[in-house]
Length: 108
Image (cartoon, rainbow, N blue to C red; front, side):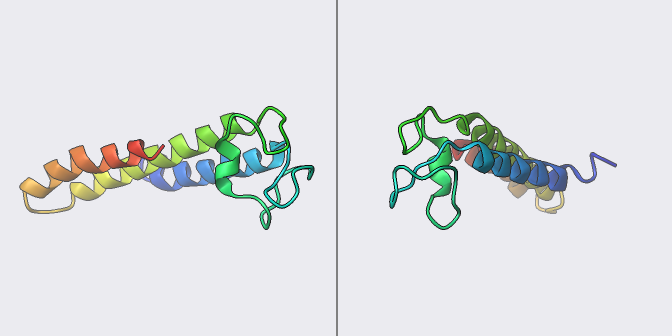
């Protein structure tokens, strides 16, 4: 059953990891460097991946955000591999099996 829903489960887990990252983000935004925490209207998702938060503190959210992106990339890779097996042409699945997962992991 888990194997059948691996893409959905991986996507949900990645969203949860990103949400955890937003909760533990130390703070700071472009508008206010002294703000506390992550604010969806003031911060960018990319703020979660920096070495240091905008307020200068160590970014404890980075580990969670990285884990979320790796999980999302793995979910996309599983999706493309499974989807390529449904294409009847013999040349296209091989291309998708090699190319699509590589694209997913190059974004992480």
